[in-house]
Image 1 (spheres, rainbow, N blue to C red):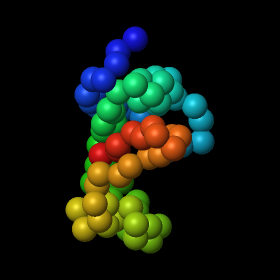
Image 2 (cartoon, helix red, strand yellow):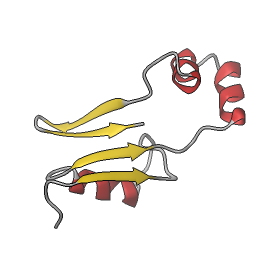
Image 3 (cartoon, rainbow, N blue to C red):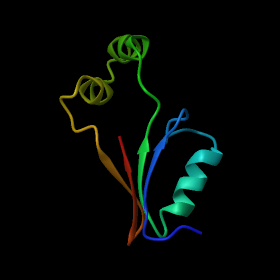
Image 4 (spheres, rainbow, N blue to C red):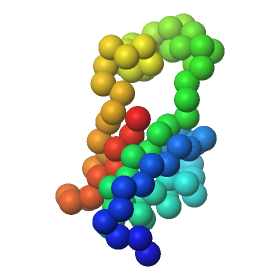
Length: 84
């Protein structure tokens, strides 16, 4: 198992979701002993239009860069994954 490494995961599945994803679970396991940056699904113009139509202002701010795109996900007290 890797330890004390910097891992960047450019992933197709979004971190958030209603079902378990093997990529997310693998990154959670690796984050126990490493620093992990999980790059979420890259949003498209269609995603931005959908957020505008649904009035999802938090997503709009993140997509256009008004809100910080780098977010920390706390898994345990001493384990985190950073999402971009």
